[in-house]
Image (cartoon, rainbow, N blue to C red; front, side, top):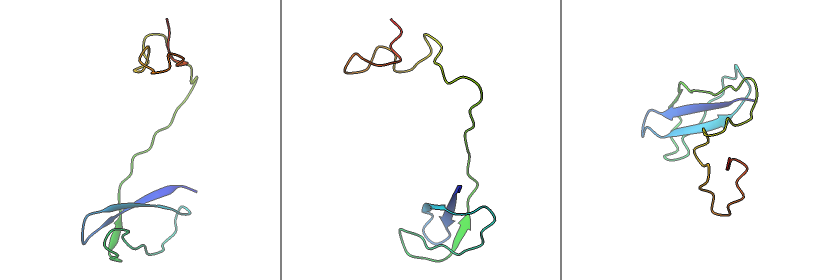
Length: 74
């Protein structure tokens, strides 16, 4: 089931809900309790191909506290 975000018209808080695609239920803001929410445009990430790191491209390379980072390419 996908996660959808709803923005509260009253306070502006964004809340995420796990629901079936095409569901038309009403949601309450978890911050102020208002039932006036609108579905927000959400971004998503898709990954294709290999998940293997390319040497020298990992932002954490060499900076892990334990020194045993699997991304440490030394």
